[in-house]
Image 1 (spheres, rainbow, N blue to C red):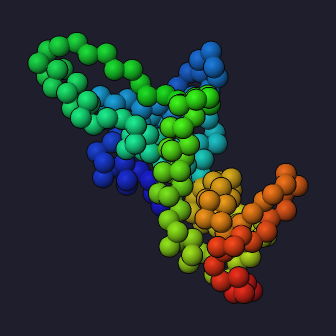
Image 2 (spheres, rainbow, N blue to C red; image 1 turned 90 degrees about the horizontal axis):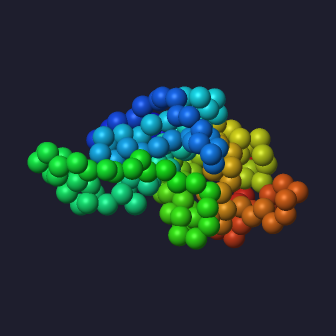
Length: 181
């Protein structure tokens, strides 16, 4: 899926620019609410491809779930009236507490956007979800990272990966368990 089309539909501009690191490290993307823009960091090579699509989908998740459009409209009205408004860029980090929850929500939104269940059902036919080459082929076809795909399949209970060893087992909800070639 070309996630920029979703951004276009939502009237959000998507731009690539250099975003300098701060004291906490590299920044993959920021949202500029008043400009209705998402800026992806062109200095991070991994953002070209699957990680970039995932990052953009994640940021769209923040836009839809965590930016109050009513408040944003009021700020825009104040600006039109000549009032000064200070709205900080939307930027989240790996943290604990409530911010961890909004990161989880944005990531879940991104996985639903990039990997709708009906698409995954079609793609898994003829593939063994316990085999990494099959999963890598699916991830490549979807234009996402293997980590995102495995997480989505785990949430669907199509696969289980109980140990760090990497062994993957079919989950109870895995469709067409007997359809592998």
